[in-house]
Length: 456
Image 1 (cartoon, rainbow, N blue to C red):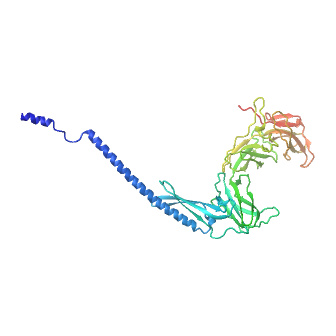
Image 2: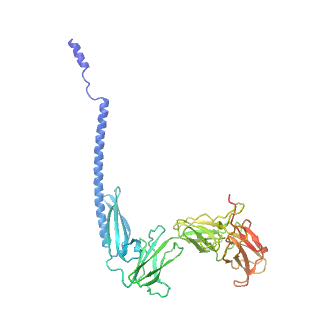
Image 3: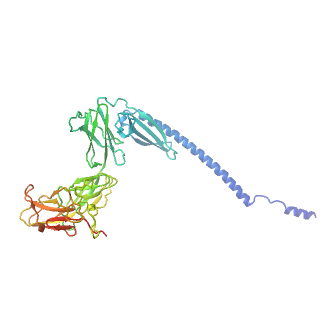
């Protein structure tokens, strides 16, 4: 009996150690506690690091404000950014400035028109991992009076299409050629535009001035180089001259690109019209190579341009025929299209092919002749015509006993010749005119150059 009880007792004794389930649960509890401790430690370190970063950034911002306040010339206090390494961390300091004028305006260059009073300076400091920049602000007044109650101030602002200041632009000003005008010649040459695109012409005599900006390779939004604006100032007052001015886009045009055999001759006074949503800009014929390629500098509008060869202005419709899109579609579905839109950007050089109307003229005489083409009334259905007559000259281009090809804007034309530039003009007979195939029609002695084609 004793042995039996002993065995029974041994068989019912609990096992020593942990089961596998208990071990897994214990490890999970440990992992949760360890992660919590690690997260808390990381959060403490991050908060400590952010606190240290904010402290350093605040000191850097304060130093930048002190530098701004100690500036010897408030006009040289401009936008600036720099990087400063501290303790292995790189801090980025951005300083932005704006003039505040007597009207309370806060505009670039103070170009709101009021009298300049002081500059508003904003400083922000950021660093890798920062939650938000540390900021500091101040107002800086000039050390001496910049406005004279008997003089005026001209504030010049040069910017690109996005309104960003363009630095390094030469600025000049001179009394305008108007009468009466009390303006005085400048005794001090204005400085080029600073990093904000600003230049200041101080203490000028009351009157009207021509303010001009210039830089090689640049052009204004009005297609001018140099660009000039008129500014009038009175005693104790200021005036602003704002320019949209940027690196030009040099558009290379191949004229009469549809001529496949000989290179035709172009009219000497022919214009090229650049059309976009801002305006219609005309440019004279550029210097051409033997292949009728030439470059025209244009302001780099983001909207780009469409080209019409010839004088064309839809806002003052005196001559619509050069624009293929003004011709009504024909019964067979043929219609006119402009060359593809030209995308322009600062410093770009886009290429465009510009087809034109082609006509051949024969000279059966023994002397070279001067040739002229004059717009004629519409000859065929759908032609928009030219309400104001226009005459183009080709110079002494019609050689004796030779047939010569010429290129013209689309529309109807009559032709005359003379033996000298100012001599009596004689009409060219229809038998001496040959319209290049698929380019138009000949009615009596009038050639109609039709841009409409059937496009698949």
